[in-house]
Amino acid sequence: MAVTNEHRSKGFRAKYQVEFYFGDYNYPHDRYLRSQANEEGWVSLGLVNGFNMMRSLELSIPDIVKAVENSTVVETKVTETQTFIRKKKASVNEKVKFLGFDSDGIRKLSVTKFNEFIEHKEMLEELILGLHNVFVMTSAAAQSAQMRKFEFRRVIIDEAT
Image (cartoon, rainbow, N blue to C red; front, side, top):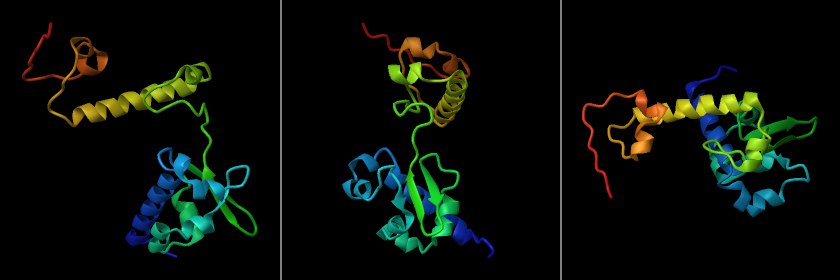
């Protein structure tokens, strides 16, 4: 079967929707979805595909599996009789957050993972900073390595006492 742009778009929307269902914002509060999970956290993908938003996409189970194969939020398991999906367990520590750490996260973080985190964090910061024309910050933040990469045509200094 040829993959059409409509199919790609539906796959993107399916991935987005599934990642919302199992994401940190929704999943902890979604009693129904959590109640459908077995002791290892697996939920029938057929059940999830029956949710209104998913049903409107009209994708098959294999299409959804393909759409989420590179997800950082969910993982799938295909058996002879059924396909399952679950929220991925954090590879380093459940408490490690994308833009910061708590003390448990730092203790259990490998050097490789820490370097990956810093690389992604700096890339994201540069992207966000590059999108804006006005910055409001403390004088200490203005001296940071990230800000030294930028040149400004005008600077307004307001030293509050």
